[in-house]
Image (cartoon, helix red, strand yellow):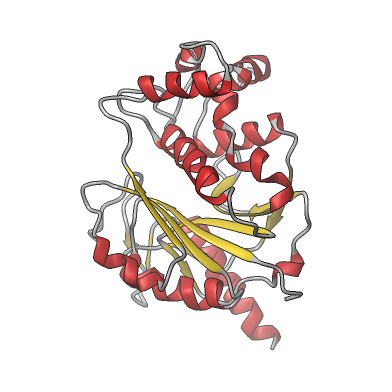
Length: 274
Protein backbone atom coordinates (compact mmCIF):
# COMPACT_ATOMS: atom_id res chain seq x y z
CA UNK A 1 0.00 0.00 0.00
CA UNK A 2 3.12 2.25 0.07
CA UNK A 3 1.94 3.70 3.42
CA UNK A 4 -0.52 6.01 1.71
CA UNK A 5 -3.01 7.46 4.16
CA UNK A 6 -6.61 6.84 3.14
CA UNK A 7 -9.74 8.49 4.49
CA UNK A 8 -13.16 6.90 4.00
CA UNK A 9 -16.11 9.20 4.66
CA UNK A 10 -19.71 7.99 4.81
CA UNK A 11 -22.12 10.78 3.94
CA UNK A 12 -25.79 11.69 4.03
CA UNK A 13 -28.77 9.82 5.43
CA UNK A 14 -27.81 6.71 7.39
CA UNK A 15 -29.52 3.84 5.57
CA UNK A 16 -28.92 0.11 5.21
CA UNK A 17 -26.48 -0.02 8.12
CA UNK A 18 -27.34 -3.51 9.34
CA UNK A 19 -26.96 -5.08 5.90
CA UNK A 20 -24.17 -2.92 4.43
CA UNK A 21 -22.09 -1.64 7.35
CA UNK A 22 -20.00 -4.74 8.02
CA UNK A 23 -19.24 -5.23 4.33
CA UNK A 24 -18.12 -1.62 3.97
CA UNK A 25 -15.84 -2.17 6.94
CA UNK A 26 -14.43 -5.48 5.63
CA UNK A 27 -14.12 -4.84 1.90
CA UNK A 28 -13.25 -1.14 1.94
CA UNK A 29 -12.12 0.37 5.25
CA UNK A 30 -10.09 -2.51 6.71
CA UNK A 31 -8.86 -3.58 3.28
CA UNK A 32 -7.27 -0.15 2.72
CA UNK A 33 -6.30 0.32 6.38
CA UNK A 34 -8.29 3.54 6.17
CA UNK A 35 -9.63 5.91 8.82
CA UNK A 36 -13.40 6.30 8.94
CA UNK A 37 -15.20 9.64 9.09
CA UNK A 38 -18.95 10.13 9.25
CA UNK A 39 -20.95 13.12 8.02
CA UNK A 40 -24.54 12.04 8.67
CA UNK A 41 -27.79 13.89 8.06
CA UNK A 42 -30.22 14.08 10.95
CA UNK A 43 -33.53 12.90 9.48
CA UNK A 44 -36.63 11.16 10.81
CA UNK A 45 -35.23 7.61 10.53
CA UNK A 46 -31.77 8.35 11.91
CA UNK A 47 -30.73 5.87 14.62
CA UNK A 48 -27.41 6.49 16.34
CA UNK A 49 -27.16 2.77 17.22
CA UNK A 50 -26.66 1.97 13.53
CA UNK A 51 -23.25 3.65 13.56
CA UNK A 52 -21.74 0.60 15.26
CA UNK A 53 -22.04 -1.51 12.11
CA UNK A 54 -19.32 0.54 10.39
CA UNK A 55 -16.79 0.17 13.20
CA UNK A 56 -14.66 2.73 14.99
CA UNK A 57 -14.50 6.20 13.48
CA UNK A 58 -12.03 9.06 13.78
CA UNK A 59 -14.55 11.88 13.57
CA UNK A 60 -18.34 12.12 13.48
CA UNK A 61 -20.54 15.00 12.38
CA UNK A 62 -24.32 15.08 12.35
CA UNK A 63 -26.03 17.94 10.55
CA UNK A 64 -29.55 19.04 9.70
CA UNK A 65 -30.75 20.62 6.51
CA UNK A 66 -31.40 24.30 7.31
CA UNK A 67 -35.04 24.96 8.12
CA UNK A 68 -37.35 26.25 6.83
CA UNK A 69 -35.11 26.63 3.78
CA UNK A 70 -31.58 27.09 2.48
CA UNK A 71 -31.84 30.80 1.70
CA UNK A 72 -30.11 32.05 4.84
CA UNK A 73 -27.30 29.48 4.69
CA UNK A 74 -26.66 30.31 1.02
CA UNK A 75 -26.42 34.03 1.77
CA UNK A 76 -24.19 33.38 4.78
CA UNK A 77 -21.87 31.45 2.48
CA UNK A 78 -21.94 34.30 -0.03
CA UNK A 79 -20.52 36.55 2.68
CA UNK A 80 -17.76 34.03 3.43
CA UNK A 81 -16.75 33.71 -0.23
CA UNK A 82 -17.32 37.38 -1.02
CA UNK A 83 -20.14 36.75 -3.50
CA UNK A 84 -23.17 38.96 -3.97
CA UNK A 85 -26.07 37.85 -1.77
CA UNK A 86 -29.04 36.28 -3.58
CA UNK A 87 -27.00 36.14 -6.78
CA UNK A 88 -27.62 32.37 -6.88
CA UNK A 89 -31.41 32.64 -7.11
CA UNK A 90 -31.70 32.57 -10.94
CA UNK A 91 -30.42 28.98 -10.77
CA UNK A 92 -33.90 27.98 -9.59
CA UNK A 93 -35.32 28.99 -12.98
CA UNK A 94 -33.35 26.30 -14.83
CA UNK A 95 -35.15 23.26 -16.30
CA UNK A 96 -35.32 20.46 -13.80
CA UNK A 97 -36.07 16.77 -13.51
CA UNK A 98 -35.51 15.31 -10.03
CA UNK A 99 -33.31 18.31 -9.19
CA UNK A 100 -36.33 19.90 -7.42
CA UNK A 101 -34.89 23.35 -7.80
CA UNK A 102 -36.45 25.08 -4.86
CA UNK A 103 -34.82 25.78 -1.54
CA UNK A 104 -38.02 25.33 0.49
CA UNK A 105 -37.83 21.57 -0.12
CA UNK A 106 -34.36 20.93 -1.55
CA UNK A 107 -33.77 17.83 -3.61
CA UNK A 108 -30.74 15.57 -3.79
CA UNK A 109 -28.52 18.05 -5.66
CA UNK A 110 -28.84 20.79 -3.07
CA UNK A 111 -28.57 18.45 -0.09
CA UNK A 112 -25.49 16.59 -1.33
CA UNK A 113 -23.77 19.78 -2.47
CA UNK A 114 -24.24 21.26 1.01
CA UNK A 115 -23.20 17.99 2.67
CA UNK A 116 -19.93 17.91 0.73
CA UNK A 117 -19.21 21.49 1.69
CA UNK A 118 -19.48 20.33 5.32
CA UNK A 119 -17.30 17.29 4.61
CA UNK A 120 -14.60 19.51 3.12
CA UNK A 121 -14.41 21.59 6.27
CA UNK A 122 -14.32 18.46 8.42
CA UNK A 123 -11.49 16.86 6.45
CA UNK A 124 -9.30 19.78 5.40
CA UNK A 125 -7.41 19.84 8.69
CA UNK A 126 -6.23 16.25 8.19
CA UNK A 127 -3.34 15.17 6.01
CA UNK A 128 -4.62 12.24 3.94
CA UNK A 129 -3.29 11.16 0.57
CA UNK A 130 -6.59 9.72 -0.70
CA UNK A 131 -10.26 10.25 0.01
CA UNK A 132 -13.19 7.93 -0.66
CA UNK A 133 -16.68 9.30 -0.04
CA UNK A 134 -19.71 7.07 -0.24
CA UNK A 135 -23.28 6.63 0.90
CA UNK A 136 -24.00 4.29 3.80
CA UNK A 137 -26.16 1.75 1.95
CA UNK A 138 -23.69 0.39 -0.60
CA UNK A 139 -23.47 -3.39 -0.37
CA UNK A 140 -19.97 -4.61 -1.28
CA UNK A 141 -19.57 -8.10 -2.74
CA UNK A 142 -15.76 -8.08 -3.05
CA UNK A 143 -12.63 -6.23 -1.97
CA UNK A 144 -12.07 -2.69 -3.19
CA UNK A 145 -9.26 -1.73 -5.53
CA UNK A 146 -5.71 -1.27 -4.26
CA UNK A 147 -5.33 2.49 -3.81
CA UNK A 148 -2.33 2.45 -6.19
CA UNK A 149 -4.78 1.62 -8.98
CA UNK A 150 -5.87 5.27 -9.01
CA UNK A 151 -4.09 8.29 -10.49
CA UNK A 152 -3.45 11.56 -8.70
CA UNK A 153 -5.30 14.55 -10.09
CA UNK A 154 -8.14 12.32 -11.29
CA UNK A 155 -11.63 11.62 -9.95
CA UNK A 156 -12.69 7.96 -10.13
CA UNK A 157 -16.32 6.82 -10.04
CA UNK A 158 -18.58 3.99 -11.22
CA UNK A 159 -19.38 3.41 -14.89
CA UNK A 160 -23.03 2.50 -14.51
CA UNK A 161 -26.13 4.21 -13.10
CA UNK A 162 -24.97 7.62 -14.29
CA UNK A 163 -28.42 8.80 -15.46
CA UNK A 164 -26.87 11.01 -18.13
CA UNK A 165 -24.14 12.43 -15.90
CA UNK A 166 -21.75 10.98 -13.31
CA UNK A 167 -22.72 8.48 -10.63
CA UNK A 168 -21.22 10.03 -7.50
CA UNK A 169 -22.56 7.63 -4.88
CA UNK A 170 -18.92 6.61 -4.38
CA UNK A 171 -16.05 8.87 -5.40
CA UNK A 172 -12.26 8.43 -5.11
CA UNK A 173 -9.73 11.27 -5.39
CA UNK A 174 -6.42 12.45 -3.98
CA UNK A 175 -5.62 15.48 -1.85
CA UNK A 176 -4.40 17.58 -4.79
CA UNK A 177 -7.96 18.07 -6.07
CA UNK A 178 -9.99 18.06 -2.86
CA UNK A 179 -11.10 21.70 -3.36
CA UNK A 180 -12.34 21.07 -6.90
CA UNK A 181 -14.24 17.93 -5.88
CA UNK A 182 -15.91 19.06 -2.66
CA UNK A 183 -16.32 22.84 -2.92
CA UNK A 184 -18.56 22.97 -5.97
CA UNK A 185 -21.13 24.88 -3.91
CA UNK A 186 -19.24 27.99 -5.01
CA UNK A 187 -20.27 27.33 -8.63
CA UNK A 188 -23.86 27.46 -7.42
CA UNK A 189 -23.42 30.66 -5.41
CA UNK A 190 -21.57 32.74 -8.03
CA UNK A 191 -23.75 31.61 -11.00
CA UNK A 192 -20.96 29.67 -12.71
CA UNK A 193 -23.25 26.63 -12.85
CA UNK A 194 -26.22 28.68 -14.04
CA UNK A 195 -24.23 30.29 -16.87
CA UNK A 196 -22.71 26.96 -17.88
CA UNK A 197 -26.10 25.24 -18.11
CA UNK A 198 -27.71 28.13 -19.99
CA UNK A 199 -24.90 27.97 -22.53
CA UNK A 200 -25.11 24.19 -22.90
CA UNK A 201 -28.93 24.33 -23.31
CA UNK A 202 -29.49 21.28 -21.12
CA UNK A 203 -33.13 20.18 -21.11
CA UNK A 204 -33.07 18.59 -17.67
CA UNK A 205 -30.97 18.52 -14.52
CA UNK A 206 -30.71 15.67 -12.07
CA UNK A 207 -28.12 14.91 -9.38
CA UNK A 208 -25.79 13.09 -11.77
CA UNK A 209 -25.96 15.81 -14.44
CA UNK A 210 -25.55 18.47 -11.77
CA UNK A 211 -22.39 16.84 -10.41
CA UNK A 212 -20.93 16.14 -13.87
CA UNK A 213 -21.30 19.75 -15.00
CA UNK A 214 -19.71 21.04 -11.82
CA UNK A 215 -16.73 18.78 -12.45
CA UNK A 216 -16.54 20.15 -16.02
CA UNK A 217 -16.57 23.71 -14.67
CA UNK A 218 -13.80 22.80 -12.22
CA UNK A 219 -11.70 21.09 -14.93
CA UNK A 220 -11.68 17.75 -13.11
CA UNK A 221 -10.46 14.77 -15.11
CA UNK A 222 -12.62 11.70 -14.50
CA UNK A 223 -12.05 7.96 -14.71
CA UNK A 224 -14.86 5.39 -14.83
CA UNK A 225 -14.31 2.11 -13.02
CA UNK A 226 -16.11 -1.21 -12.61
CA UNK A 227 -17.76 -1.51 -9.23
CA UNK A 228 -18.40 -4.36 -6.83
CA UNK A 229 -21.16 -2.73 -4.81
CA UNK A 230 -24.81 -1.86 -5.25
CA UNK A 231 -27.39 0.15 -3.32
CA UNK A 232 -29.19 -2.03 -0.81
CA UNK A 233 -31.39 -1.71 2.29
CA UNK A 234 -32.10 -3.47 5.56
CA UNK A 235 -35.55 -4.57 4.41
CA UNK A 236 -37.85 -4.38 1.36
CA UNK A 237 -39.96 -1.79 3.18
CA UNK A 238 -37.05 0.53 4.08
CA UNK A 239 -37.40 4.26 3.50
CA UNK A 240 -36.08 5.51 0.15
CA UNK A 241 -36.28 8.84 -1.65
CA UNK A 242 -36.38 7.54 -5.23
CA UNK A 243 -37.61 4.15 -6.50
CA UNK A 244 -38.81 1.19 -4.45
CA UNK A 245 -36.60 -1.46 -2.88
CA UNK A 246 -36.59 -4.81 -4.71
CA UNK A 247 -35.83 -8.39 -3.66
CA UNK A 248 -34.07 -10.89 -5.95
CA UNK A 249 -35.11 -14.58 -6.02
CA UNK A 250 -31.98 -15.42 -3.99
CA UNK A 251 -32.98 -12.94 -1.28
CA UNK A 252 -30.64 -10.08 -2.26
CA UNK A 253 -32.14 -6.68 -1.46
CA UNK A 254 -31.38 -3.93 -3.97
CA UNK A 255 -32.68 -0.63 -5.26
CA UNK A 256 -31.69 -0.30 -8.93
CA UNK A 257 -31.67 -3.07 -11.52
CA UNK A 258 -28.79 -1.47 -13.41
CA UNK A 259 -26.12 -1.48 -10.74
CA UNK A 260 -27.30 -4.74 -9.13
CA UNK A 261 -27.27 -6.75 -12.36
CA UNK A 262 -23.93 -5.23 -13.42
CA UNK A 263 -22.33 -6.20 -10.12
CA UNK A 264 -23.74 -9.73 -10.24
CA UNK A 265 -22.46 -10.18 -13.81
CA UNK A 266 -19.01 -8.87 -12.91
CA UNK A 267 -18.90 -11.21 -9.91
CA UNK A 268 -19.88 -14.16 -12.09
CA UNK A 269 -17.30 -13.29 -14.77
CA UNK A 270 -14.53 -13.14 -12.16
CA UNK A 271 -15.51 -16.54 -10.74
CA UNK A 272 -15.51 -18.12 -14.22
CA UNK A 273 -12.05 -16.71 -14.97
CA UNK A 274 -10.48 -18.24 -11.83
